[in-house]
Image 1: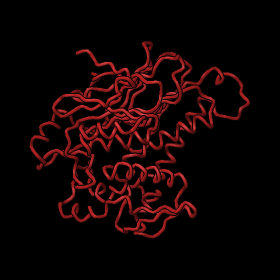
Image 2: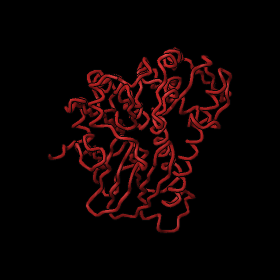
Image 3: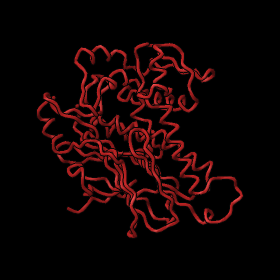
Image 4: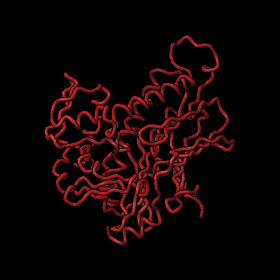
Length: 369
């Protein structure tokens, strides 16, 4: 890698933390602090149920606003707050079992190992793949769910990078058009036997949307905050009729609580991605986990961090990765073409940029220095 990049990342990169989020009680209002794979939730007194689980290689945390009905006997047959928490944890575990490419028994791993043979999978796996293919096409390959042919050659936990030969040989197999889905037979076929699927760029967002759907259809709760690492989804409006507030931590202080600013929204999803989330350094430089599908290398970008807001957490998740590959200027153009989405960029030179209607949508308040 270039020395300039190593110097920049030296200031901002951190290793993945063991805990993705912390939920702590206080009485001064509620702020979700979002920062590349970690979120901290401070909550006001309310009829709350909190819990967490480890899934998608991160800690997933939930704050559920039960409402008065959860204290009384109910006849709806739908889940109360405590039951909703159990349901969310169960669903996270189920989706992890389906979508984890590194688990030999998962649907994704079985598709990858089939070498082009049709593979029967769960309907929810088909839904996740269909969602991923939609965004792969929409963003013209800047986001590509077949990045697995290259991404699985990298090991950011052990600090292993592929040889140039291995990476070059894998690149022709990165093409989302090689994924064929037959919904009638519930099968998935890779028309390129050497292609590999990796839904890491969209899985948490897809699941967050599904969890909100589960809460809506199967529970009687009033509202919830779903935090899956750097993905936060707000289910329904905040019960006190105030806005949900999400603080973007300053990437110059990754281990601290200093904020760049605070977002105010009525709901939807907030997703942050950063080059510092998973990195390692070797004799050749510093390497980060967001890969360019065209090169199989860590993206060469002017961004250090981006934050995306929109109703769909899956879209926000895919966009947060896409914008890194695109860079800040083209990234703003991409976001501008999506009516529901807005984005905030922190550039490697320390400057900030935002999409056209960011301020209008978020009432963003910058932190005082």
